[in-house]
Length: 117
Image (cartoon, rainbow, N blue to C red; front, side):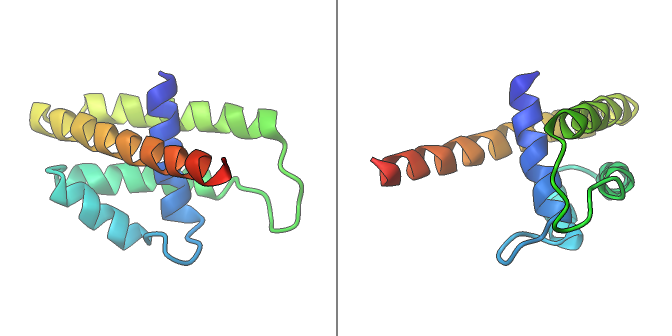
């Protein structure tokens, strides 16, 4: 569960925070589709993410980590429930996508640790 949490955290941040160099929602959808997730399934995931993005605090407001953790766990639960309603192909593609994102995230963390030493 933690691995999915980390992976989807990265995805949610990539889609909705969009700092320079991070993908837009359209780019995230294209990446999901390139991983084999259908357009319909990708749209559903992005809709859930959009609903949760509306809950993020305004810029400059201190983030309540516990509230953010709770909201993110709700997000994960909704995405997991949604994916279970999709085709077996989408479920398989989604799991592969999550695994790929997890590996990318872990690689970036390892690079940052190496730079800090």
